[in-house]
Length: 443
Image: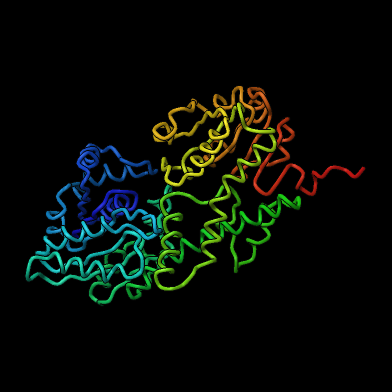
């Protein structure tokens, strides 16, 4: 099948590369000439495991190409995916200006019947808006087209796997032929597919992400109760997760959710609800808990250190999650800003994201590894759960630090083992004394 994908961000580039790998002819489009030039050289604009190899392979096989000419790409395609950015406006609603621009180019290139697929995360009703925009910008008589909603459910860091092995494929269409075209395209994946109306498909994406965000905020709220009561939130979550009605995914207490999806989607759902006359108080609370979580973590450091002024703090991990260099809504940014505001001296290490972080915080020090960052510090704070941090040598860490304080923002360490290495442990909703086998003896 001949496809074009407008937008070469995480969603567009991964979608294009995977469809090419499945044997389709794919043209990826972006108005950023520099980005297209780099992609033609095999240089990725984003870090995503396995993406560079997949792109280079399919380019060499002639199935994947890149261009800045949207209209030419649309002319050569049966199916056109819109995968442009939809950043949040001050109101919380997504900014659809890039979607509109894509529609303008599509309208001018309608040389044959086409299926236009909304892959971007957009609020309910956008399918109708896209249809109106294309009708508005099309010059006079034009071939028929159909608008389909096909939301993505990718996780940065495992986007290729998620595209090849989705839990479900959602196709929102008002026309059977358009739906069948998408069914044919996705058939090689042999995954569950659900066909809905366009509005329902658009809401499914938001409903899913908001529910997952709610689970994270819920367990983070429970972590506060565990901190206050001496319980261990990891054991609480484990006990909850065995209940099949609840499940164990997204029940890991920590610093909260970030990235390009959850923050934007929660804000958009709240704003959409308000536009429809509903006050979504539950989601507002979910958002508030998440906003407060990094400051709660900084508060732990402030209390343990007796203040933050002139304290040397090492931050391990900058990206919003492992296996990506994405700093959008990363909790590290909020934590570093709070530490600097109180006069702390900050150094940081991240395996991938330091070049991007330097542009935001040029005043902090960037180190070669975790031990380099910890040297001479009063505290180490683990902010992103990169695998290389999970197996840190605690005795070595203790030797290079000025004070042996470890703040585990992702609960990746065994508190008792950290304590045995001569360090003080501070997690989220747990402590070295919360294990039933590590409680201090009664006087």
